[in-house]
Image (cartoon, rainbow, N blue to C red; front, side, top):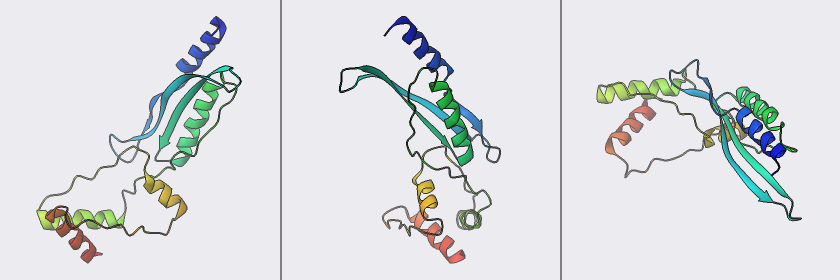
Length: 163
């Protein structure tokens, strides 16, 4: 690479956001939006022209926030990149802290085991968001293997009875 191209690439990489962008306002210590400068590769096209491929990944539990950081990354990459393309990614899936099902699960756990369960959320690309986008009124009717723990089976039965 020429000195000029190298300088443009370094400016692009240092301008491109990376890491946590926003924390959840609803759930303590939960990352809501992030971006990852995943990889930089030197490649060669079929006609032997070299090029640089930069891969990033944006995720957020809030769909609009994911698109906002995607545009920010696109702008940063446009400093040195002739072309910026986007894949599908995962849709946002905000945790529903007011879910009646969550309330039922917490109550049955406390009744059965005399301890409040620790309710957590994670910041990750989840298939749940894909299912919810394509089938908003659909339940996958997943099953729990009986060979799991007796405690979980007991909890599941109590939760289903409560529903």
